[in-house]
Image (cartoon, rainbow, N blue to C red):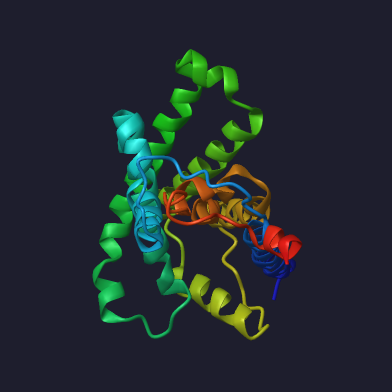
Length: 242
């Protein structure tokens, strides 16, 4: 076992702990934040079940973005759908044995990576080319996009330029489950890839990327448009009336 393997094992343990604890804290914060007013964006469903379907459409299809900006929707979908395929492809490093279905869709993950990086490059370019977007762009917005692009590019580096010993990488990751630190290949693209992934996991709970869980708690989306049929009363206000 080398010091490099120990360093990366510790880094991944810390980043995973920060990601889980940070997400749990933020989701609890979202869950307990009161919504004292009925502020559903209309036209909205008039039933709560319909509101849940609306949130599902928003999370899966970016419905509001589709109606507001088609070009931005295309590249945002390319990035998110590509990222989903990449994440599914990477499941092979965390599951043993690998299911046949997961093995069959491995090639799709490569195309997903291309869509992901292509979408990210356009989203980054948009931050500099469009005046009104450049005006509201903060350094953290650019850094997050660069970090995601770096993860994708380093992944392609391992796929097409400097092949990595994936068997050794999987053994290293599976060993982390049981606190058995095994040898990690000391290959620059792999080390850069893992370092950026760990960095992303650490900053995720404190960045704008929190819109991933946040969309499910948005009262403008998850509320039904029924103020005329039913009085809206927040839980904390109900206690005051009681």
